[in-house]
Length: 551
Image (tube, rainbow, N blue to C red; front, side):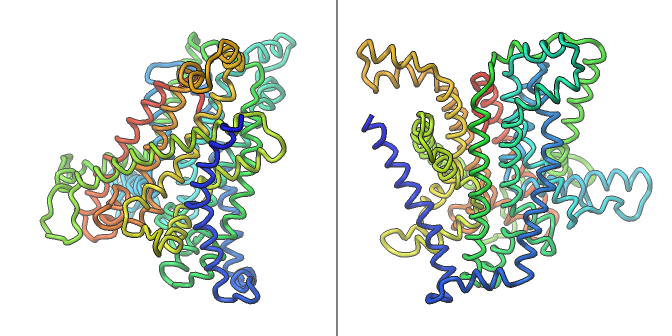
């Protein structure tokens, strides 16, 4: 038992050095301007109507985004939880891709679909002979809300559908036998059982919308600055590091509160009521009306994923037709740019950093999951929220903390690729925890007890009992970690050196250069990244155990 408690020291040291220490450096920076009073930057921020407005705007836009996300995600969760149909595995994998894509790519998808020269506007202008694009939602709140819902709805789908698919159908059948209508059964039986999963997923979606950076920066413009964008502007444009640090601390306090609520409701969702295998709850036989409804539902989901299809379509469009010109253009350097990096090198950087991230995340996340899975005393939710904190702290703030914390010997990591891997692993290991923890909590205790009675050592018990049961959950967690690293953008943008350029950073740099060819190549690189991530999620859906291991 002592050894099991000691093994958590490794993740605690890792979290302290690479997460809490940079956060402490941010706090110290925020106090630099007023060392005697100590809270000068905070009082200036909280006394400034502009920054108070940024806090309020960040809260209410995240609230509206979350409501829209839940409204979209619940019907899709029902589709995947209660119906079996050909292509379901691939469709569920593709529907999850937006969440793991870099925000810059999601923004590009919406621009490709609904921008001034996007697919919808081009089609409408051709059909109705219009001179100006009829759809004008760029740099508006509408496109921010839509992008956040598109980006985060898979959180609702994965958490809620996992729980919904395994609820015992006898509960609903009993209500029907007692004369309850289908709507009443849902409101008074199913919904209360689903509520912990719905609330936990909604809180997590709120946290991601609250810390949104790329979507707001690219699609919204400076007039819709959130706390995240304001912190970036204070750091990169105004060089007011003490105010940026104070604003980052304020945002992190909000985020920790959200994650504390999430972990408590997520634990409630893990205590499932009379669960049964999903095969017993999924619908295989259906009437004509239900079949037509299901087909319409699937087509609706495909339409909702239209930004992804628009991204591919724009990447293949060239000179009034379709070709691979933008893809082949990635491999040329006609301008002789000093900053040119071969796409093979860029992709290799992303893959090798993702592999290293996966290894670190798998070790740290699995150890933490074992620690959290044991019956705990008071404070379990606090510890869970603490380990999940990197998931809710923005990558921009994390990169900012790394720059000011690891800028001197013996921990000067600014010139090393390792700083990228550490930043990526901090963002990725919480996904391993959320993938492995449900499997650990659902593991029969009798198996370990029987092994111990038969004289098996803890190591043999892990290798012959735990590992076979956890293998699929570990595969899901490692795939999540790999995909998260492949798509990470915020921290990489601040920390990357030219020779370590990753795919998301290369996409951003292509977009920042003028010319249609650069935009086309950015779309092509985005498409390549999308295919890599989608392949990983198809693997997740094939190997997931009883649909467990969502978030």
